[in-house]
Image (cartoon, rainbow, N blue to C red; front, side, top):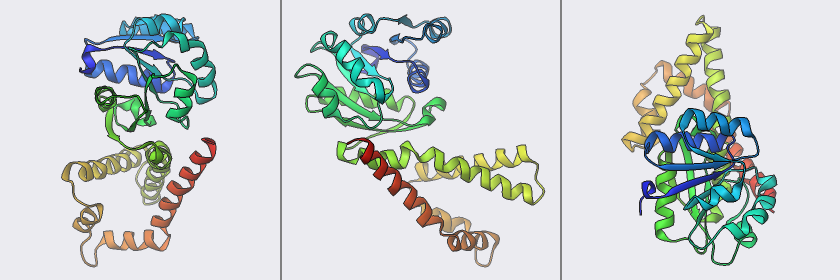
Length: 269
């Protein structure tokens, strides 16, 4: 069964929840979406702007949905699960995007046999360019995984992985945008140093990062091959590459991912 045949309910309409709602509607305008939250102004805005069904009662949203997306903060997820446990019947698929909360931890709070899928998206969902990883709980079916993948592919790219790799995903794509924003700023700073105005420098820096990423994704070539295409003998680019290597750029990024992954494991204990 495809995503458009499902009624989807969101528990929580914060930044990530709203980004998902908007992305899904942009890709599937005919789909039925429901949402609940304790913050009424956010619900009223979504209802006015998008026409989705809203409620302050989680059980009402769940009752009207085939797929229930848990888009609340990890700190309050357990309380939410306890409150909605009896509303999650066997015909519901539960999808959690709560960072650091394992499938088992969610399954333990719900009725035996509940189908759970865990997803780790990132902040780029706000511009429909999320990098998401999807893993299945013990009761999730192949159809459940297809529904989750279709949902998150509507706001970017999504892959399936075993849950044991979720901490690595957190360190890479979950935290990754925060690693790249300073890179864009630093590239722009270099251009400003050389005389370019700030606004144009940021535009060129950001588009350069976007274009490079798109080349990797669309050509299927190894990043090293693409680098060599730009790097001519004794040219300007190899001078810049040499400077980056002297500064330990590769080790810095590797260590960032490794340390973030370690912290994710710590928080999950």
